[in-house]
Image (cartoon, rainbow, N blue to C red; front, side, top):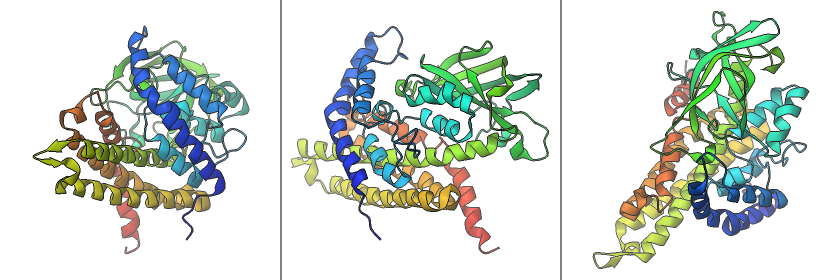
Length: 404
């Protein structure tokens, strides 16, 4: 096995490390100051647009998309260490590089399944960073971890579809730059095949009947960087039939195709979050004294740091193996590994960040350090893209199948 990164990956890693140190990390404080002066907290601070322009100038743009025409043409294995670096500042760096969810997943859907007209109208401005988008799947009244439960209706009437439903935790929807929603609903609610009942459709934000009702908080955070997480109501929303993505009944399959890369991208960034937490732990440990000893000399602190390093090295290898499998045998062939990293990575990273919080004491839960927000983000990822238990259930079935 050769664990070395290729020349292009190494070049991009060096550029991205420098970009993070010179531009992104110093901007973390600036963005808070600028947001406090904006008329709306959902507007994009000027420093974010400056970061986007600089990232584009340096060729650090759309790194997530493997197609060379639309994106950087990187494989999953090449992108993995780059996404990890952005995880050091998950609220700011992915947006700066136009590699932030939910836009990345939405761009992948449009790239794979949209018509040429749909791509021109929506994919191209998303790739250019001119607009943002939202993915409307989760609903408050049903267990949305089972996509067959979705209740939103998409009904064909002549040359139009009429959409009715209520969604929540729709990431990106509070951002005024969010111009397009990909909505998942049922076009055939009584169909015999529960996985062919759903479809996906494009709904422009300004369509009559679409109401962004309120922002949902995440552990008390409004998550401005993602454009918030909104409750959205669709009341007799009418769009042209040409807004359908793919075919009727194809929504479930599109959702699965969208989630594969999304899950591994989250895990890549989580490793970067863990690295940031270890760095903060070490800096704190060598700068503080308690009970007559430097914290770095306390055995329990040394154990935390050592265990964190071992854990991160294990997780990174599993994520890289998963990325390599996705490149070589496809998402279906990497099914077990994708689910494994989705289960293992958030759990372990939460524990590492929690130890860092403990080391910082009151500062760890305050707004003066990034740890509390990092913890909230990592904890949320045990729910996003399918909760742990769904992946455990599927993984166990695959293992047991060998013996049945």
